Length: 160
Image 1: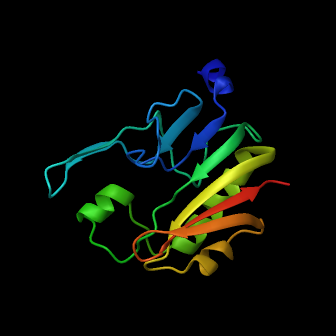
Image 2: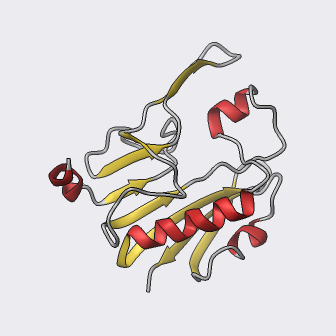
């Protein structure tokens, strides 16, 4: 397993169903999530969350400075029913969400190589992006707002 991981250049620690990946089986990436499950959504579509490794993003089981890129898309909702399709699709934050996100940022930067890139995605429907960015001491480089209501923020960091 260690040899296989050494070949991987990208980490997605909250992969979910790999929704925004062009290649959902990209050989350069290792996909982790704390969930491994399948659901049929209300519209009949299958939701498959099948990480390469089951792992919590606040405690990544990887060596320091192992990846060239980390794609960090943590759950962004804390006011949602446990069994709602949104919770199944995106995951759910609990009442400790500030510590969870802070620890997640710290772990993502820990496993990122110097001069590595962290791509961060956040939807601020319930929690503002500025409040999330306050949970890391790393400085963003660029960002872009997207989505129907301009709630989704894509932010790029370069590890010093």
